Length: 367
Image (cartoon, rainbow, N blue to C red):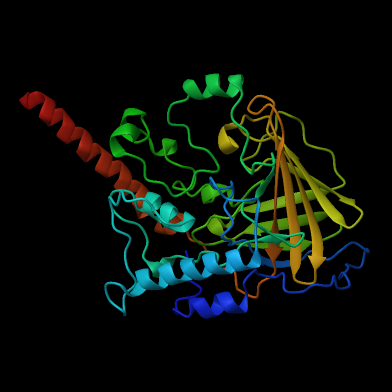
């Protein structure tokens, strides 16, 4: 969970890059591989202030002035947080803070901190600007439906969810639920019922994909390595790796994978990735193993890709839904994410739950 901007010169950074990677106004000549296809290789930083779904009351897009005001306010909040208690020690989020957050990120940090508190500012590497696509400063990654929200569950999904107890999903974020409710649902009964990211299997918030989404906390880098026959997408968080087999048929339906079976083809200058054959252990946003994700990667500028994805699962939603965002190129280095080696927290969670069970049992005995 590396920090890449420890200094507090955040406001200056905002002024330098109000919207990352989109300063170029003219489309430059596209770099190409020896086979003639666009060269998509590089490391991209998905950190953004644009949430997955549009917040209530927000317009579909912001004006430049609105975006700059919000970005500066968020930068100021983070700087104040970092120096409030000790100018030499970033503030630890206070556990049990139930006051409403004033920004998207403040809400996330309060949820992530839960009852015991979350990361201090040194650990966080959050986006400092909104994503821009087609000249629009977007307020949501989801663009279809037009309201910027993921469609509601259909009847089949609602019935399925009602019968599911403590089954982790691939898009689970860093959220500490009410301990009592979590215990009642059985989430502390077995380490395999803890979130997949807590088990070091997949990154928080569907960072590994598909679809590959921002984490909103840290480790948002993705690296693309390209050959004529295969394309690799490496996710920094939990070092997840996807291999896209070019111009290939999908594997038999009885062969299922954590991140699905991805095949690729070129549609003009756009890379189209079709993914099926998911395992029922991932359940992106409550979907089934029949989830189908189509992604498109297109080079817009020398240092910017357009990432677009469409998600469908008739057993979960009555309509497909689509999102898109810019992937800006970065010169930051992907750092090792040694998750299993340092994962003492999972054991502590389980031990703490057993202590709580014993205390509750003793309380009932006394009664």
